[in-house]
Image (cartoon, rainbow, N blue to C red; front, side):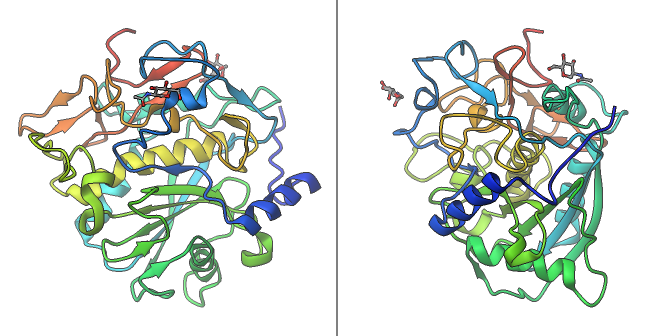
Length: 345
Ligand SMILES: *[C@@H]1O[C@H](CO)[C@@H](O)[C@H](O)[C@H]1NC(C)=O
Ligand SMILES: *[C@@H]1O[C@H](CO)[C@@H](O)[C@H](O)[C@H]1NC(C)=O
């Protein structure tokens, strides 16, 4: 069956709503810092009351809005903004490579991706089972400064695809652009309302419609929010942080946010496919519904049942060689949040 993916020429109505979104600069689809904003709990996204985050959910109305999902092989092109250590890059690369790895022990990152693959477009094509690490671009000298806005993020991506040396390829058919900022870079709304977000670039700014995500290293600014549970906010006494599986609190915390954003980009790349809630500028997507849940019983401030490594580190899934702690995702088949370490199936 032929698969179409009309990113090059979204319909006029989509462009119109995109323009409106741009004008109002509404943050779209953010991974919010922990603890989740108590004034906006899951029941706000549902048309009723759902007490248990991980469980019952007959009221969560996740719906398909007819737009494309990423059915082609997904290639993640990474921009390393600012100063990154070699080992930090290795951890993140291995996570992305693990998404479609066949040889990781259960519970695995590829098992986690199976929930994403359950989502289809209107032709019945599933999201791709293959996620590749694409080309990488280093922006070592902070081309757009150490404080980025949502719009200057698009300029960083433009610089990366138009660079004189080794530009990132322009792949609007199946590319994802992942901008990772170092721990000394502040991004608009970082820490207060976002640890990462995804959206797509505007042809008027960048020349193309490219799905992208930003995820920041929060270690310096707000690890207690964005790298929870590897760091705990000061206002919560008597809670010990978990030991992180790869020895880098900032980067281990980023892994779950990267997973969150890639899963949502795959299922809602142009903000017109899978989301709950009535407002496409504030979509509640497949990872938003499961924020903070890493295992069976999770919800509120409890991570759910996770695993302990021999070294005492906390994780819930295996990559090719490393271990990771990654939040669960909403399954529209089961109608609740799930992950590879679920105890019930
Ligand atoms: C969640 O939202 C509902 C409805 O807005 C409210 O009744 C409930 O108390 C909230 N729960 C928490 C934990 O804030
Ligand atoms: C494709 O999606 C359908 C509908 O959710 C699901 O039943 C099927 O198992 C999915 N296929 C794969 C390979 O995940």
